[in-house]
Each structure stands twice: as C-alpha cells, then as structure tokens.
Image 1 (cartoon, rainbow, N blue to C red):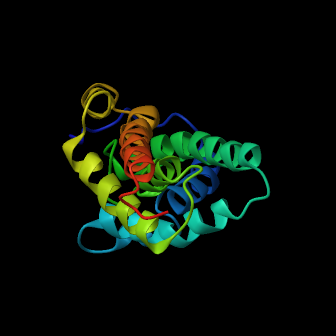
Image 2: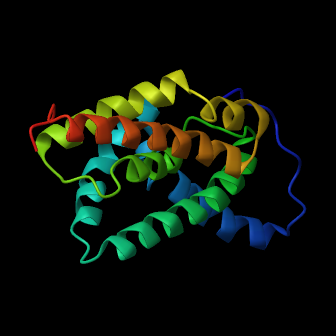
Length: 172
C-alpha cells in the first residue's frame, strides 16, 4: 500500500497517549511489526501459533466470532497507529496480516501441511493483491483499507486451500 500522511489528530494529549499506546501495541502485535526486514512476512509467521490456538476453540461459530472481533479491533488499531506513525500502512502495522491469516485458516483442519500451504499462499496473495485486495490497498487509506486488503488476501487463500483440500493435494 502506498503510504500517505494522515490528517492531524484532534484528541487531547492524554487521550492520544493511552489510546495510541494501545493501538500501536495491538497493530504491531506487541512489537512483531518492528522486525527490521519483511515485517509482514515475519508478522504472519508469528501469527501461526495463534491461528493454531484458534483452531482449538470448541465451536466453529466461536472461532468465526473471535476472528471477526479481532478484525474489527484491528481496523481501529491500524487506523489509530497509522495516524501515530504518520502513514496509513506503516510497516510496523502487522495486525492486518494476522487478521488476514486468521481468515485464511478459518475452519481449515490444522496440519503442518495446511499451515505451511496457508502461510505461503497468504503471503503470495498479500503480495499480488488480487481484486478486491488491490482496491482496498489503493483506494482506502485508513484502518479499514489497511486491514481489508489482507482480509481479501485471506479469502483468496482460503479458497485456494479449499481447492487443495477437496482435491486431496494436502493429504488431509
């Protein structure tokens, strides 16, 4: 995503300090986004064990609700952190990769093959940005656009995983 300066924040310094701290902590996934190279790839790698834990939830409905809630909070955090960093899609923001990867792995039976395929396919679709990911990436320079280009990549990944699962190419 092209980075552009965001509008100035009209909140008070006290509001900025606590909300910004929370937003930056969430958006950077507690610092994973500060990895010096390929922060999106590193952030997705760090998301792997959390995606596994989500797969252990007792119901698919709960799993989907947790992913939806995580994504909603990420929209807020990415927007707020983008303001703090001065660019909409700062490299430190990797919670959007987590949201997209969580969507990619939603209801996928967890094996090392599905996890690896999901990781590599997600990174591929995140880089290629097929429609509508490219729309969100280029047109919506806010928390929604930052998050939903990755969610769209996650949907494409999930569709590709479904094809691989149904054809038996992942052996599950």
